[in-house]
Structures are given as structure tokens and as C-alpha cells.
Image (cartoon, rainbow, N blue to C red; front, side, top):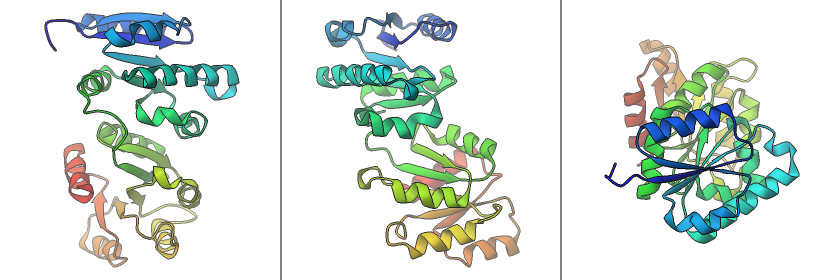
Length: 258
């Protein structure tokens, strides 16, 4: 960081212990942090001298039309001022929020709970102009093991926009609802799933004109020669062993999406 501290404004609907913890940690590592608790009109007057705004979203956001309208106003003020913002919220409502407040797709998104080793580099990338979500490739993870899917998302979310579904038919339904301008660039598909398994999902994807062009990479826990041959016989765009490391996965995805 430069000698002059970067200025961060955290916009909150209600100040909390969690927000206080984030504020303290950011102050401790050298940022100059201010809190905007409800008085969001201050965004207009401080947009010019604030390096990045952080909006910490409430868990009941989608159930409250007033809060949705308030968030829309915040985003529009930030957008019109040409300022930068990171949204922190629940992963489960990110996709729905894009429908209600489409302007948020131009800002960074960070899932709760917040990890400082993820937030800090995101702040620096956002300030430098290299970290906006707009333009990032989008990956759909399809895996019936939510813990594994979330781990992979944590590994790759700084480089890609990531969605998760935990069943084969959920994947089909999700993909058919994705708007053209929000397309999926690659699918990480679990080979072994109950009810509708990976090969069945793969065949359905390749038979549908809306999805047959999307590259599909199989996720498999079996690395034997016979298992790999069985996976590759379906002619996917590749496969990844579930035992792979974060570094190897990022390198592999970079090669596939470059």
C-alpha cells in the first residue's frame, strides 16, 4: 500500500459486531475507514475522495422492498459518480439479487462470512481497476457435495464468477434460466451424483441448442486408468480429479478459459 492511507467507506443498514470487526481489521492494516450507517446520501459528497465503498448487506434483504430500493439508490449513486464498490452478502441470494438490482453486476461481490485474506486483495484489485466482476468468466459448479463445491468456489472466486447447484436437474433448470448476457462460460460437473448423474446431465446439455456449446469439465474422485477412460469416452472438454490442489485447478481453468 502507498504511504497515504486508502479511504474506505462501509455502508451498512445496521451497524453490528461483525461490521465493527471488519472496520477494526481494516484500520489495523492501514486503511482509513468510515462508517455510513443509514445516512447514504453522504455517498454523493464523499464519492470523489473515497477509494472504495463496501456495502455490507443484511440477511433479510430480499424480503424487504424498502431495503431493495435503498440498495438500488446506493448502487446508482456509486455508479453515476464513477466510484468503486464491493458488495458483501449471502451467497444464496446473489443470483436473485441480480434480477432485482441488475446494476450490481458491475461491482465486486464477496460472500459472507468475510475472510480478510480474501477481502484485502479484492480491495486492492478494485482500487487499481483490475478486480471488477464485469468481464470475469463465469463457472457453474454442479456437485451433490455442498462442502466440496463451496471449497472449490473459495479457491477460484477471486478469478471467476461462480455459481453452485447440487443436483443434475437443478443444473439444467439453472442453465435454461440464465439470460444471454449472463452466460456460463464453463461447467465443472461431478461425474458421480444420485438420481441424475454426471453423464446423464452431460448428454442433456449436449442435446440442447441452448447449452451444447458450453465446455464441460468432469469432476471425478477416481483416478484409475479405467475410471479416466470411462470419463473421457463421453468426450467432455476435460476432467479434474477431486484430489487436485488449488494451484493446479486454477492453472487448469486458466488454460481452458484463456
